[in-house]
Length: 264
Ligand code: ADP
Ligand code: MG
Image 1: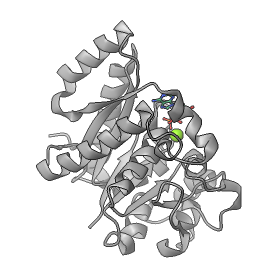
Image 2: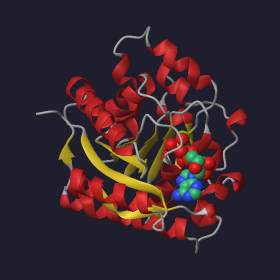
Image 3: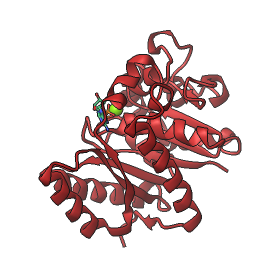
């Protein structure tokens, strides 16, 4: 049975898509069956998986709005050795059309049911806002992985995000867990980043992944080659960090370290 992990943060540019693509590839490299769902109309996870967003037969739009069976929207075996549900500009319309539909929060959850048996992990790359698409991701997920940059206002934003996740969880998905908080684009020479990182650990304790994703130019370059970093430069610190993260996610799953997202 697949574990479904939504990668969410309402802030743009914090490393959601980079995390989605590289953790999906790293997990697939451990011989797990992986599906990555791109829910961001920008389609960056799609392009970063080597799939041309302008030349796909179907996207998450058809899955969410047109009731197209999930098997018919999956692009098999991308460059990262995982399967993909693509996104492009069409998905912008999904956000609006969802508003008109019955049971709009659980469209994705219901649509995925037929393939849950087929995968070990399903990762969902969310858009940079808490809109209906993100709500659908959170309703379909077992847990949320929150990437964040260790910047000055990061903690404030994170507390607000956790609040929203808790409120949403209590309405649409009471079993939702916090998978973990991931420090991204980390520069250990930056004192502020170290301070924020320490505060983060005090505040969120075990929820913070031990794995830290360093700032690494290979991670930024890889998408233009249409591949996750491990297939672009496997010895890069970025590729190695995401392999370590996949290992940590597997260990956490076994230990059930996660804490409920629902407000008590
Ligand atoms: P989001 O999906 O949250 O908007 P992205 O994953 O697209 O964030 O990252 C934003 C930008 O930062 C992209 O240009 C990406 O290539 C770059 N980036 C992300 N993570 C790293 C990293 N660890 N090191 C260097 N660049 C990174
Ligand atoms: Mg993104």
